[in-house]
Image (cartoon, rainbow, N blue to C red):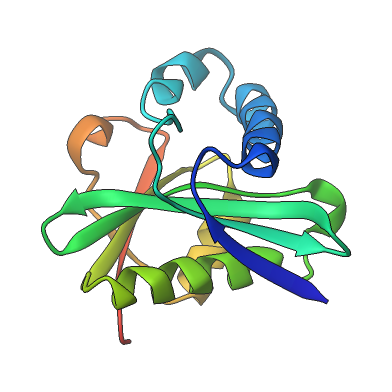
Length: 151
């Protein structure tokens, strides 16, 4: 059974999962990884979800304020052996629920073209492609998406 825990970036299990995420992204992104890494610090994330199966941390995600009425989804990851089991969808749904409880109207995110499984997850979850925002404008590998909560 999947258990979702709301926490912060101080959580040791979250930090361990993020290390695995960063290793995966370094392989996928190659030389571009250092550019993306500067936007993915986790020192002060106050809204983190860690997914557990049998007390083992198997996935995570987080959000941070983006605009007055929007959050940015960050650090989504599921351990490779646990993919395809609905973990990412459950984490994302919990993040969206939490953001809605806090009064946010939408979620935005950035993912990479080299992460087609992530793009499919977000599309299936109701995210629409939007023009690249902020630091991702003009970045060929970046895919930015948005979902209005309550859809």
